[in-house]
Amino acid sequence: MKIIYLHQYFKFPNDKGSTCLHDLATSFVREGLDVTIVTGRSDEKYNTKNRWTVIERDGLKINYIYFSYGNHLSYLQRSIVFFQFLWFSSFRLLKFKGDLVLATSIPSRSFRANSLKNHNWQMAISPYK
Image (cartoon, rainbow, N blue to C red):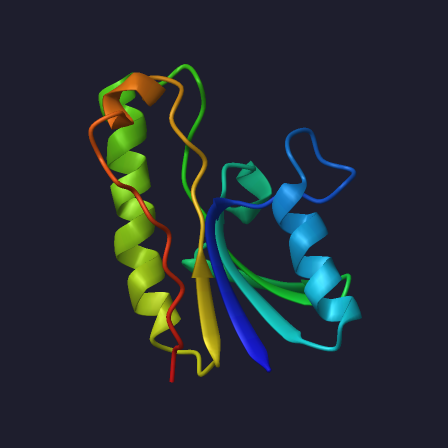
């Protein structure tokens, strides 16, 4: 089975930040699944003339796109970067064939849980062919 995983940022265990996506994706690889990740990165080394940088590591195929991003940006600027990521990654996803697309996102700090009290939120995963 081939999984295509979409997440705004991906970190390896030796990087600063959360490695939840790495842990989940490598657990899929250990189960024999093929995992391709489409993600963003703010490291300058990924700011190349090519829009996308592709590396293979820990059994994962990772497609990085560079965006200048950090906590120094305003909420509006970070939102614009997020929508730019969604735009470019949507076209990148069209290049892949897979059995399943997983798209995850980290809740924004400014998003309050009490705003959900009158909503019935559900997560859905659909097959991708």
